[in-house]
Image (tube, rainbow, N blue to C red):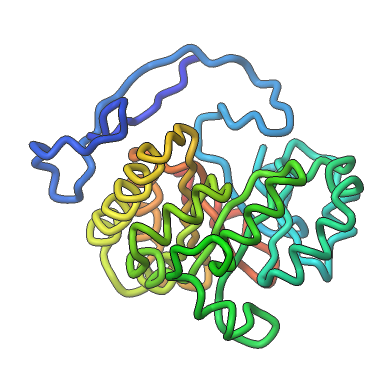
Amino acid sequence: GALIIAMSSLQANGEVNQSSSDSSGVERVVAVMDDAGDETAAGDFSGEHLPLMMRWSNWRPEFGPAYVYARERDLNGLLDLNAPVEKLVMVTSLAEVQRMMEQSDQLKAAGVTTIGFNSENGTGMTPADEMRTLNSADPAVNVVARAAELATANGFKVMWGPVRRTVDSLSDDAIRTMMAAGVRGLAIQEQKFIENQDASTRLTAVLRSRERYLRLAREEGIEDFTFHVQIMHQRCPDLTNCVNFVEGLESIPVDSIAIWSNGPIPVDFVDALRME
């Protein structure tokens, strides 16, 4: 068969083609590649659609290869999961990272590859004093940099997941500090905005953030920086708008579509996103 991949106006080196006239900021160029076949293994995300990212307990075989994560409180289920997935542990504080690193051998033996640091206010989330360090360019102060350095030293990849406004509000120097410490991916939370704004507006915002982070990563000599976008099925009142948004994300492309949910993710929602 053939795998249809929609590319964006981002050129091979990641720079934006400023001459694009597409009102959504996405110029689609279609390339056709041979499908490698139906067999997929853990971490093989070469399918027709972008992989999903979700809590491990929400994963279903029909969703295909995916990034799946757990918090400390439901870690055992993730470690026991035997599926074609890439496993992440999500943490929200430096203390939690330190506890996870005390069992790093167990995590790696179970297939965990990545530590995701979710910096967010709220009960059970990032302490206020750590949140205040996010814009620091001092690697001994910035909590994400400190967490990344520790996780990287123990052999894990590191992804950062802030609230959406933080993505664009931090200084370049703070972001460089995080990257230099080991951050190799960013997950942005779009669920609040796609609920009330049209897809083209949000795609333009995603493209802007993505280009900035990829530029900073290149300046740090990082060529494998990944970019993930989160939505929620409960916050897609206009399903067509969310489908258009995901279609545009596949065209950029980003590296995965994260679906946050406290409960099961409806299969028909995923089918709609994949236009199946």
